Length: 441
Image (cartoon, rainbow, N blue to C red; front, side, top):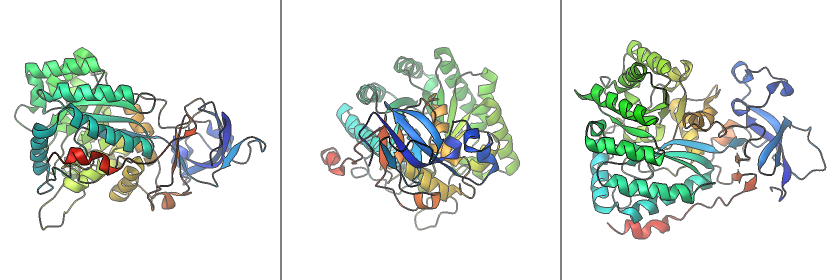
């Protein structure tokens, strides 16, 4: 279907309008057309030359004698960006299933599995498996949180560094440290900050409400500021309305006049707080320049989980209210096939599809396509990723679906993934690859 040529056209491609960086005037649209019309897509012809996007022009206006593939109105996305994953935890469900599928049960199960099995080979095999899935599904960039307390830091960060080198040119990988924030009050925490600086990573951690939380968050900012590191927190992953670490993080960022990028994940308790309190926090988040990443699949799986009882809420944060306030909002995979989330396949389309249904990101779809593409790319410091534009790499995902109602109703296993304009092998790794790793149990 895709011409074997250094220069060819993708004709009649339906491009999500909010991701089109091209001058919209040539399509007869105002500059902010995506906010003023009900049009979700723009039908274009895309010229790909030597691996990059050479032209984006109205459909039907490209030359007739050049090599071309007619997409017949099929949707084209830029490759996905997965801002929040846990590759080091992934794919242990078969040997360490969660006993009750609760948050606390998951923590206990993960700790036991890590203490028993997480040597370099085990972590490498499972992380590599997750990367194979991500790449085949059409992801270009991802950030993984790495459990990094004690001796595990040296093992897992070394594995990450090796995989980062092996996947260079195919996947853009970032690592964020993951520890309880009290860890940064210790000499080991300062050593970890140095390790993340040496790796070129992100300083991260889990913010739990406790009497010392303000000092813990302040210390994380101090360490990051001294080393010019960005920050990525797990915040308020609970249905307790009294959990307000997101607000404390925002206030601390402003007090430090922090110039780096801060990302906060989960932020579930925002959805169960009084509207006035939630709006105050959202305003602080906007003022502090913090980006939010929601993990709808994992939070739906864990939150409000009680045996024999139907859950009463979905666990997602206030996506609409945050976006309306101008806060950058992304969605991501989070955990895959581990005690925190027993499912998942590192598929950006699945994340987008389920998020639309869980959080009602439709009618209108508006700019929500950015949440799995350009917004997380911006939060990762990747301005040339997750969007369409002249001179950008032709890293694209092609679907036969022509409208969102078609795209989000089927898994789109027949998608075509282009990297630098060339179709890649989208065969997913066989779960049997991990049979010997699971047999350790």
